Length: 297
Length: 264
Image 1 (cartoon, rainbow over the protein chains, first blue to last red):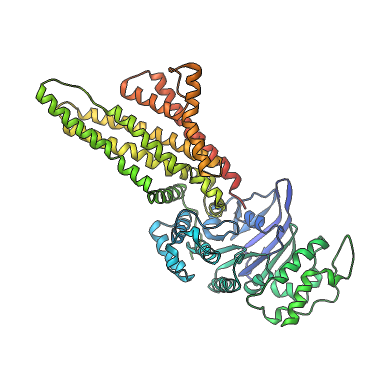
Image 2: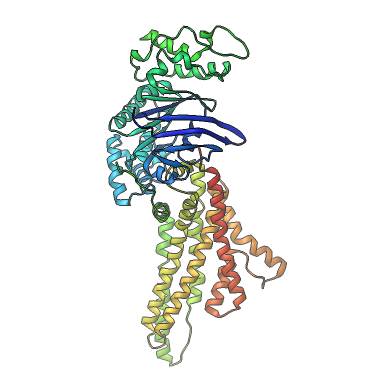
């Protein structure tokens, strides 16, 4: 295994009086890492902490061998981030927004303009790039956002829910693009609550549940036979597991993952439920979804 | 891929932010019109000087009228309009569109953002006073070479520069600060207008017309009177402090707000 490029040790982070990350430990070295978990699991908070935007209460973070938050600015110059909630820089066209993103990352205007057109060409954004970005469709916005994160040729790409709001075709195209970027040698951290997206792109996963690491390791290990030993985490409440994990499985898969990803579900699954203890398999929405899908194959 | 790439300098980031905002503003007709309009006073001033010269030659009497102060007092109005038009949507728009995080994930510190936005207003405001002011000084020197010493022209340009600098800082603070305080550009505009009118009006109501300036409009008037008419130094210094205060206040309000919202 290659050297870890994300090293997190006992990370605790409090927001609004609530401990959002509760002792996260991870050493990740994959070319593409999937940061997966349900909504509210702490994925965006962890990304914020990795970039030094959010200050941890305790613990340490190293990304690309840079101590965070001390050298957060240097990391941000070397990273391309596609943020989930934020759109495109307002007030201008798509190409304006990409040029500006490049300039903020340290490029001169001329260089940024050159690279912006190259990035937008690569992402199949045609003449629309000259239209005001405020009128873009979701798919076009996502492409422009990706171009904004790529324009300065970053070493790592951090993508926070990149497929949200896209139709199946747009999703397939975007995932293919991300895979291409990975194959070109760029390191990718893909945060998503859609498991299929992570499967399609990533070789390593960090699974967050309620601010703690539920799983960290290879994708095959997560979806394969060894899963039963580590899943579900002790802290998963039944209510959450049904509502959130089932929604993962119900998302339409643009590109069905390979069959080998779906090893038979382990026979003994301990879904720990504090309130009502029905049969484990029926309670484990996550596993239900995987079994359902593997039957479809 | 570049290894060991370092974060860009603060000046690079601040300039990039200001440059983009000025670029966007220049696409607006009002802003372009204001810039073109700012060339009118020096033209009018030039005509006045030539007419004066001709009249003095015809009548043989030295009129001794040099309307630089009048020009600056008039020019403050387009500067105010430009600051309000340019500054009040700046931060409010970013907050409304929820894009502050886009800055946070790049090598942009909150203070880079605040200063960059302020510079986007201050630089054109400075230019709007300084460029015609400089043209007037050159014209004055050219039209009245026997009456105006070169040193006087240098002094005039320095004074105009000083006024332009402090006015630009204050007007940027008084328009960008409200923009950071509220989420809608319209409310920011109202708040900025209130800043320009209410404090002085209130103080005048309490202390009469000779009260010290506490609003940016009166402060700029006091500074102009001190520098160009030799009026009370105390009021001039008070005006200077007030103008600087509005600039600092605007920057602090923006910084505090942006620091709160530059996160996921």
